[in-house]
Amino acid sequence: MKIFIRGILAGMLVSVGCIVYGMCQSRLLGAVLFAFGLFCICTCKLNLYTGKIGYLVRSRTGAYCLELLLTLLGNLCGTFAAAMVIRLTRSSAALMEFCGALTAVKNADGYLSLLVLSFFCGMLMFLGVDIHANSANPVSQVLAVVFAVAIFILAGFEHCVANMFYYFMAGTLDVPRLLVMVLGNSLGGMFIALMMDLGLPKKAE
Image (cartoon, rainbow, N blue to C red; front, side, top):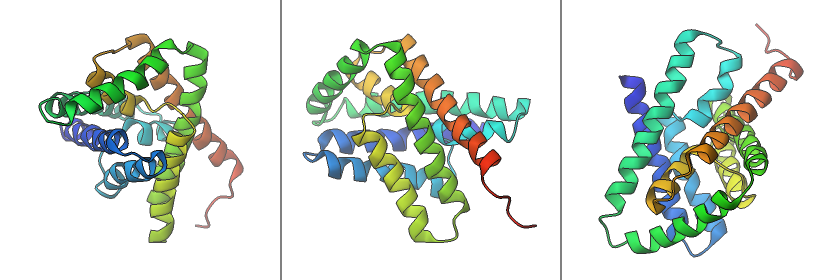
């Protein structure tokens, strides 16, 4: 239950990032402010699917697979709850218009394109979370998260949890495309984790 709750909270924090990005006039500023959500998730040790899936290559157990599933379901519920609540506010009209335009582009895109864009996002998310977890330098921790998020947004990469919020807010959910994004994020996160394990020198005991 704790895993599921931490997943809900992470989904809601990602939704806050989506909201500030949608309401911000500057794409660059919005992308940077979006990173606050991931920074809080990492610092508070909440469960975000895109930050945890890469570690599957290091923890190939049934228990971890169950944790990932509960995390993804929690993220889904958290983004849904945030979208339904924000629809009750004065910000809803502008956000629904923004999210509608954003999801229209995604829904018109091809599956291969979405998979590739999601793959690169998965790589960035794993790097941001892993550096935050393993760096002793607080500046490096912050920069890793900020750059990972800002780059994936400005590059147009696809983040499945953020897209859950956009879809719920716009009311234009395309389940097959969302599942492709989940797959792409998963493959990207696991790929970079595996390559790092194979290519980077081992830490001294």
